[in-house]
Image 1 (cartoon, rainbow, N blue to C red):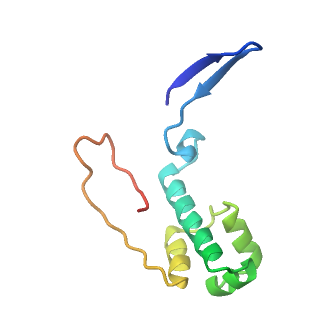
Image 2 (spheres, one colour):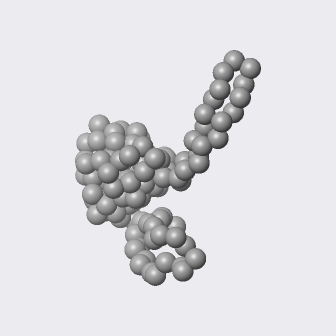
Image 3 (cartoon, helix red, strand yellow):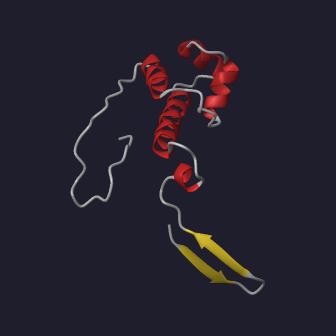
Length: 115
C-alpha cells in the first residue's frame, strides 16, 4: 500500500491506496479466502437477480431460509465454507471449476481468483 498526502484549504487529507484486497487491508484473517467468498456471493446474488427470484424463492432453491439468503446477499458469509458456496451455485445449475496452475515467474506471489 502507498500513502499520499493531499492538501486542501481546510485541512490535510491522507489517502492510502489499497492492496486490491479490502479484507487484507482491514486485517482480516485469511483475506484471500474472504475475497474469494465475496466474489462467489456476488455471483450468487447476480444469478438470483438475473432469474427474477425473490429471496424466498432463492431460499427454496438453496435449501436455506430467507433470512440466511438476505444475510448472504448483504455480505455476511463468514459462516459458509467455499464448498457450500460452490454447492449454492450448483443449485442454480452453474458449474464450478477449480483450475490450479503455477504462478508466472514475473508475478510476486500466488493468488486465488474467480474468472
